[in-house]
Image (spheres, rainbow, N blue to C red):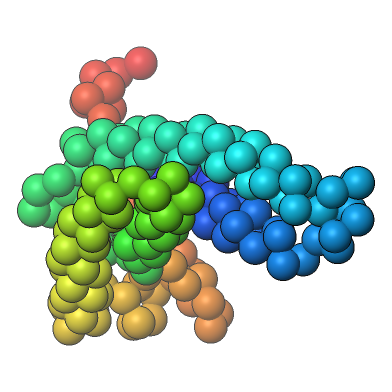
Amino acid sequence: MFVSVGPSAFTVSGLVTMAAHAKRCFPDDFMGNGALAANILEVVVNFACLWLWGLAIFFFFIATFAHWSTIGPGRMNFSMAWFSFVFPNTALITATFAIGNAFSCKPILIIGCAMIFPLILMYIFVFYMMIRAIVLRQIMWPQKGEDKDEGGFEINRTKPETPGEQTPV
């Protein structure tokens, strides 16, 4: 799932922002020269976060291709986990802006702006599918959704159909 994108991307955003403000936090005599230590820290953090940003992008593509086979009507029932298609990717966009600002790279900032539009479309799609699932009573209904065994209800276990069930063992 896209959940793997979030941790490295949020780490990028946090570390780059902290390193950018290190000069204001370090005392003047920190490690001999506080301003120099802050500059060195910023360079090291920016390049380390560049790698983490690449890792987040890698996880994004892995998750995208892993879900490719489930695209289509009736292939994947709605669950609240669908919101993981949206929110971890906000971290990737935030990290993209952080890297663009850290390296003063306008093309990366433009890519970050371009990434916002598909994210908003995905959010609208997931929200629509959630409303649809409520109307069709697929979620928020007794014995439906993730809480099938809540409230004293028993789970009706279903076995998936496999080609091997039709032949005797």
